[in-house]
Length: 378
Ligand SMILES: Cc1cc2nc3c(=O)[nH]c(=O)nc-3n(C[C@H](O)[C@H](O)[C@H](O)COP(=O)(O)O)c2cc1C
View 1 (cartoon, rainbow, N blue to C red):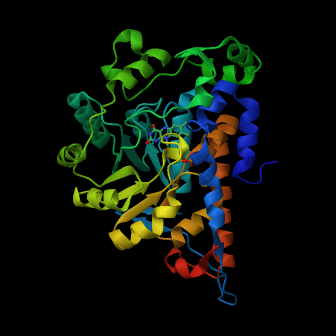
View 2 (spheres, rainbow, N blue to C red; view 1 turned 135 degrees about the vertical axis):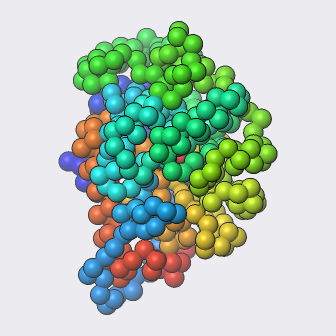
View 3 (cartoon, protein in one colour; view 1 turned 90 degrees about the vertical axis):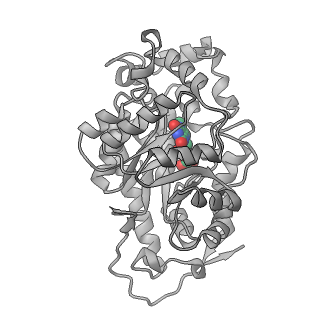
């Protein structure tokens, strides 16, 4: 029975081959940050007022020029085609139906043009800056043409995290070990849903730049790894600012100084994130930096947050501490792997119902009423 987002994870563990589940579920090294991202919510407890008449509630918010029906966005995640054929399209459609934003990764399986052609909704593009600046510029041009309204530049994966849980499934880079291959053979449903339609998934956005032999799976991934620009600095952000006219957010910020520098570089806001515990193990959970960073940036800045959110009550805690809205990563990948688009719709509506119930129990009718007065730190 699926009653909450953690139930999707249990189901996904059953239907996905172990290597694909580990790819999504795992974190870096000892997974200290991955675990901490879940524990951190317990540091705050609600202090709920009563008798406030919260019978009518509105979860909508304005984010820049876009209206969201709830304070949620789908986090950018790469290579979703490994979970199910057309997973990106399913995530984008579910976001559109729910009235929230879908952020598409540079390394998504679907090309941004495919998502745009499927229908318009709040569609943002997440950029990994590549060494080849012409390719990077071209990605931005295509994103604009595909109707992506906002650019999210991810800056915390410049040096790839050491994901050991993931690595254990491979005998050489990109070559599955014998036990992992045997495990795939026990998941015919996954093979049918994921590989049968078109074989190994590719990287839709990168396809125009990939030599023919690199178009699918292994080749595309190694091209991408070699193309990641490891020399990023704040000047790169200024260059991107000159290339992109619309709103720009920087994802992967965890310090007050970087948050301030992001705004000084012309960004409209930031995504506080430790990449879901997949990058620097031992790094702080963004929730612990949120109030301080909100105080430093002021009320006007867009401050999104992710890493570890699984409950509506946790989303509400982040909003009360100063977040504008929350990105959800893994749970929606589990939902798409298990039940496709309908799964993502159901997961989003469970989360929405939890946010709504929490608001009611806190006596709040609008998101603007949430604030630190509703929380006490243990
Ligand atoms: C399988 C997977 C792939 C990801 N790929 C990307 C990516 O391509 N670009 C990016 O900015 N973040 C990527 N992320 C990080 C997410 O955008 C997000 O920060 C993280 O998943 C949030 O934590 P949560 O999964 O605990 O909700 C990825 C995360 C996962 C789990």
